[in-house]
Length: 268
Image 1 (cartoon, one colour):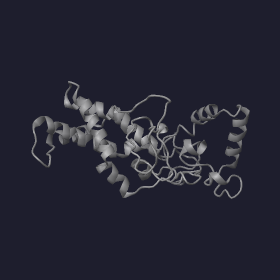
Image 2 (cartoon, one colour):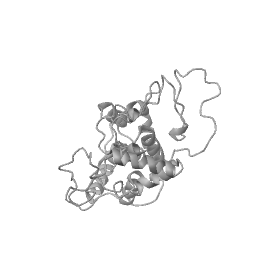
Image 3 (cartoon, one colour):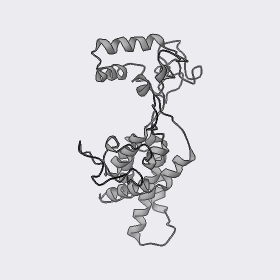
Image 4 (cartoon, one colour):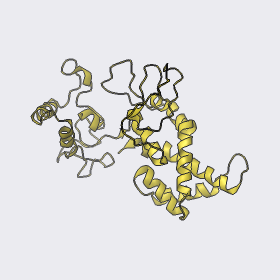
């Protein structure tokens, strides 16, 4: 739980505690969390609440070493002296899991199916090979086959179903950028998002603000707003088309750019 919430475990080999655990920088913290977990009746919810209400968890990853909230206490290591954050001097930047990235894109496009329970595999499915992952339900309801996974799962380091995985890899690969640029799933959801936002009667600048709020949970900066407005106004398609289709293409490409940005994939 500590590893998941902090995006960096107190023990760097979480599947090998207590034997073979190297770089165990905070044994007292791990022991205290274990005792607290037991005393709270083995409640995962209470343990997560305990971690998230701590001052260490609430530190920012964006603050500099000189900021008063960037260190646990006066004299504690700052970013310059603790670049790997082994002393928990600041929050770690955390990339979303593959499931969360998929659900976030579907949520922004308005296509996410929030239904609970029920079957996830068609009754006539005989083999995992060739299975089409066309469901719009939350990722927790998608089937996990040993030899067949959705493309977005394979690209963004989903755990290998054939192995025990105590800690997922967090890679940065060209395939990830290519998937966000050219993947049918991303392009389709960008089009749905564009269609939804164009249904509203509002100025283009307000649409930009709404798109940023829906995608990143924040308003755009002045520079981001100006750049976005220039893009949707000056967009030129590869082939001539009518004004309505041109506008839809411009906003579809704009949403693709938002989906490909770091602000969607990372928690700072």
